[in-house]
Image 1 (cartoon, rainbow, N blue to C red):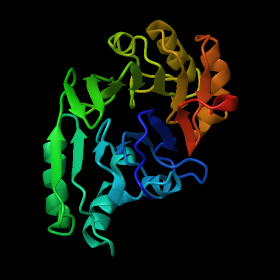
Image 2 (cartoon, helix red, strand yellow):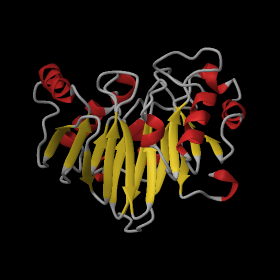
Image 3 (cartoon, rainbow, N blue to C red):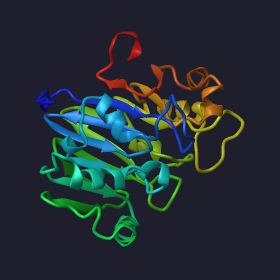
Length: 264
């Protein structure tokens, strides 16, 4: 598929679930595409097939950024690297892999486990460990990171370009820095893993996500990373109790930006 050169970002919810295998929700993955540059945020179970459904082959990705290094967010990295080496049309495009503290140790563990099977051949592979409160350029984007309340490797991500901003909380519980980090974001993609009444310090409920969107003054809230119990608990209704702006419950394949008719 030819690369798009549009300057308007396209953001697609490739996978919106958790570690629980489901037919209706793949593992976490979101595609950002702008000016011919394609980046995936996380690569959960089913991500490569979901990217294909969004029109992107694994060879067309320029970068992957991991919100953290838990298996449900990194499950298809090995498959990506294996395919990059052994596809009938092997990868030639450079690939950047970025993640939080611990990425270098993660890379070394994969190298030991798979020996030479996932080493790059015919393309350049860059691993980059970034820390919370970092700022860096990635393709047409300026990316900022912030801490999240989940795991030592966790990063919240803010993507900015030409007056547009999108914030991804990644997995997180309530964190005092997140509202300021997400201030004024056009799009806030927030985890809403748990039903109301089951909140704890490493995940959010939909109402907590709504409160975060309200405090941040976000333009649009997308609920993401839903366990089955959260799905069954009317998450949009709970989020709207705390946030008066547009609320969307993500589903696999949904275009998150630009918004379309009916909220898609």
